[in-house]
Amino acid sequence: MTAAEERQNRIVELVSEKGNIQVDRLAQILDVSQMTIRRDLDKLDREGIIERRHGVAVIKHETTYTEKMVTMMEEKRLLAEACAAMVKPGDTVFLDSGTTIYEIARRIMDIPDLTVITDDIETGFLLHRSGVELMICGGTVQKETGSIFGTFSNQMMSYIHVGIAFMGAMSIDSNFNVLTPTLDKASLKRMVTKNANKSYLVVDHSKFNRQALMKINSLQDYTGVVTTKVFDDRERKRIEELKIQVVTVGGGGRQEV
Image (cartoon, rainbow, N blue to C red):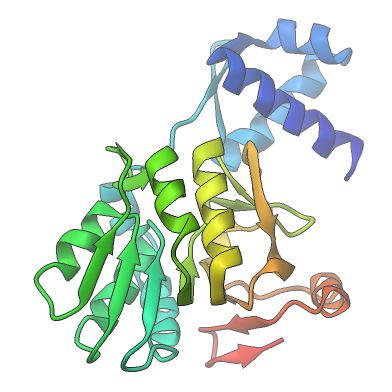
């Protein structure tokens, strides 16, 4: 990790702890110039993590469910179709929260003898009207995103082993670490991924090279990564070194790295 990345991660931590913080105070804490801090904040703002407001850095909340539903729908459709093709009659499936995962639910809801566990209110509402055997994680509902998390969710999923899990993520950094804004979400996602026979991270291209506060795991911890991102030569070499299985959809069809 570069010095700039370490500094930007520290900025995210400081802003998350305090809710907001002055630019000059960040420069003082990190012992760099205000110009350096402004460049860091510009990058974090572009990545959707922090907002700059008149000399103050403010933590940016997650995009709402409604906003997510209308962005990059073609990519979500391609990802969902690739994932739905992996599901067979009789499977036990975990569906993580998020609008891309919701699109997977729409495409598997008529598969016979399917059991689905989800931590997403909207996905649960969709599937309760289908023939799927449905289980919903208990816990706190994040109203902006429709996701469920907390101690009860973690306890429930510690006892459940699924055949296949489709997981989402807010961010993947340049070192292929998978990140999320909150500790409770990180804990649940990590547990489900570990307890599944097969686990797939399902992410569109916009999730890469972004920062968030909490590390869930790394790309190599999944059975595979299903994405619309086209990796450059340096990234492909790193993927091969780490033995990460990548399925790229879109741009002329499905490709595996």
